Length: 128
Image 1 (cartoon, rainbow, N blue to C red):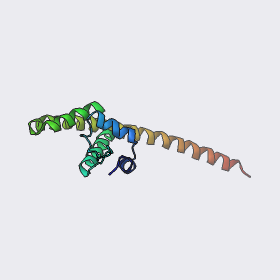
Image 2: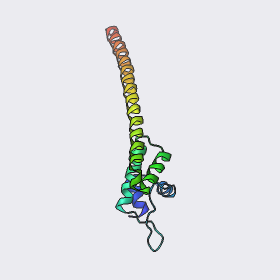
Image 3: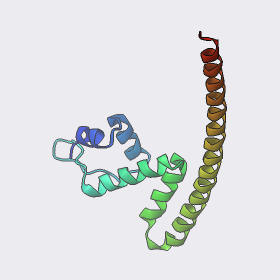
Image 4: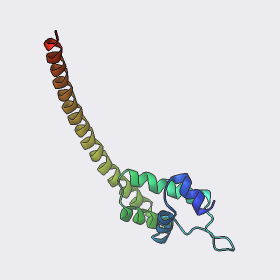
């Protein structure tokens, strides 16, 4: 798959894909005889993983470390697991905070709706 196809598939720019490769987030992408990148299914799996983890809040630095550890092989399994466990805990805390924020917003919106209803009732009573 060409870089433009991968860009469209994941809705990210070709510059971003090149950057991810440059910093080691995507293991080196194979190139054809003309020097054009040819992404494999495995490359796409890495991109999907990276985007998912970024969406969960992992930093580029953490992702680079994870990919580096992965490339070192099975001796780093425990370290990779710990890295993911730590990131999961950060995400769990973030989700809890977001739930509290959502509850607060729902409360505030309900208060505004109450005020709007009272105003409407007042306006109705003023009509002849």
